[in-house]
Image (cartoon, rainbow, N blue to C red; front, side, top):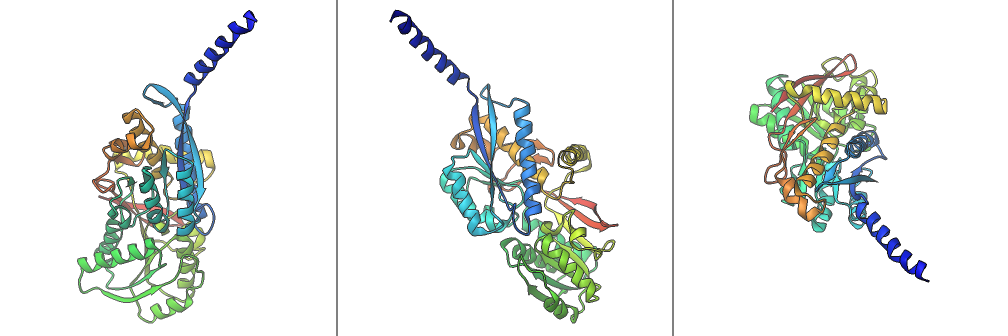
Length: 380
């Protein structure tokens, strides 16, 4: 009996020692459409999140002097607002420490209310609708420029650089597509009040047949067609424009501005036909960091970065940096540090304004040459 009595306290002591040395697990939720028409972009985002978590764990990231382990909790919103809110609640119930996502504005906005009510910080790496941060939820941040800048800059560029005087506008009726199209028109009109918007048409995010609206537009002989929507719709639209003999230039926002667009458009994306913008960009002195990331991504996934994977990577790293500064991964404790963060990412410096928008957000203008996405210039 004496032997047993001595062993029990020793076993308890060992158990407590093991518990004290156990790594804290930090759960980061990531949401993107990994099914549906935009699944290629959702997977691109998801890969960026995986790279960030792997890098954090590989370097033995510490919070308050103690090593921690980051774990990704992956969810698919299928670019559907209803599914977006369902998976947002699922992440809240899982008690994640923070959320990276969503990709689409239409899912990001309704989900943001759920995260706000739960006090969980959210960084979107891609949603550009101004409505997201206009809600003034102190948990909502983004690391890319919003549609006010994106659409407005494209509108001004269409008039000033492409000399467009007669413009037709098409959008996909999503929060993103409609919003960026409206800001494009404002930007064009501000640059040249006399510019004619000869047609406003709309489709939907899953459409494949645009002959009716394009035939209507063709009769108005526009210089340029602006499309607010994703590459999965822009590609087939470009094919049908060519089939109908429409010679107008084509312009789109970041949703259409992907490496996949030439493939989706088949042989219908001639040199300099398309101008688009990515809601982010680096200056020449920061280009090497982004190039290095893209090379690592290519090697790891045997695929080029399609669009926003680097911004997802930076969003995860920014959230982790705020936790380190706060010496805590508890949402309520690191949230104030996230609001004041200054982080140097692969996409450039990251800091947020009072609304949660990125400060001094950049845009990168692209065209396509020889079937390749080709950088034109970075606009601050």
